[in-house]
Length: 144
View 1: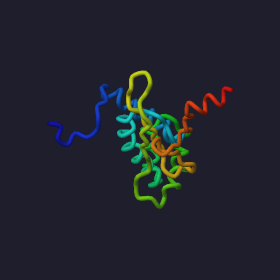
View 2 (view 1 turned 90 degrees about the horizontal axis):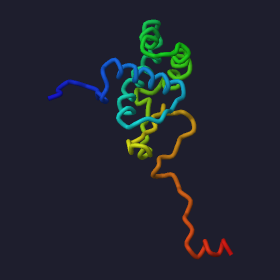
View 3 (view 1 turned 90 degrees about the vertical axis):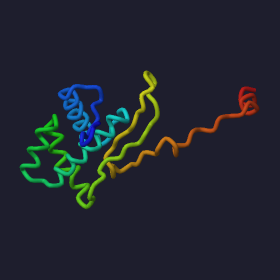
View 4 (view 1 turned 30 degrees about the vertical axis):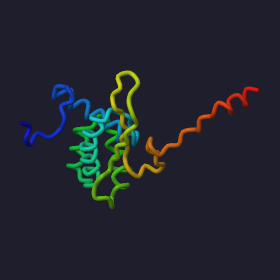
């Protein structure tokens, strides 16, 4: 039984998993939204929220902890200067996971993970309107 064992293994060694999370967090904080698989997005949410909390703390020790985890010093700077002030009055829930469907190659479930309050909100796939399909009579009328 896996009592008190948090986190998914994702079929990777611990070093590979840590490198994956470091890359994903760095890219998310750099771009505000990324596309990845559902399992990775759900695990990434935990780590990204911790990084934003470090940014909100704002001390030198918090900056060093964030810099030790993330890949790019420019992203650490952006976290503390731009991202954290955006969430100053928010007690948590800094990320949102939107399910997009299945990947074409292997049918893996794909999600969009983004920082909340990024400005333009993307519609979820269920609320996005598709163009109405023409009836057979309309298609023949267009051709003639």
